[in-house]
Amino acid sequence: MKTDKSAKDLQEVLDKIAGMPEPYATIGARLHETILGAGPKLKPRIWYGMPGYATGRSTPVTVFFRLDDGVMTLGLSEKATVEREAGSTLRPCAWYLEEIDDATLAKIADLVRTAFS
Image (cartoon, rainbow, N blue to C red; front, side, top):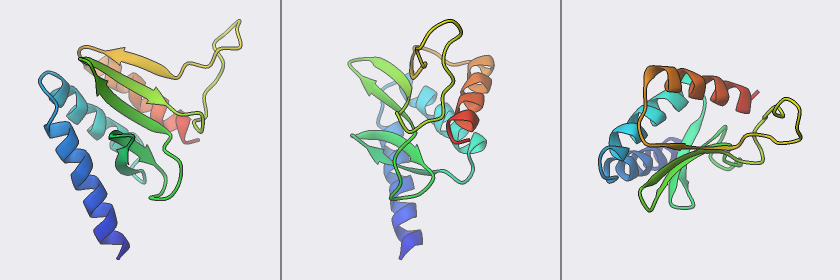
């Protein structure tokens, strides 16, 4: 049943976030809430061992975050809609986080809405 698989995927993501050391568990929980708030139809799942978000269970992950060696990274995959940086051909796709605040969460919500547009 799809609902059971989606619920299992969600629980695995929540467990992964809860298992992170502080302050990253708190940052991860706030990221998770913000990502789903900005994209309520997104389906969370574990992707390469960390939380990822897509429009469907079998569609490519577009937004993700991970914790590696004490560094929290928020990223957008190549499937995301991302505008080039002004004056260059670069497309921003990853950010490091050591802490989180409301202004950063608002920016992340905008990135998520754009990524799935």
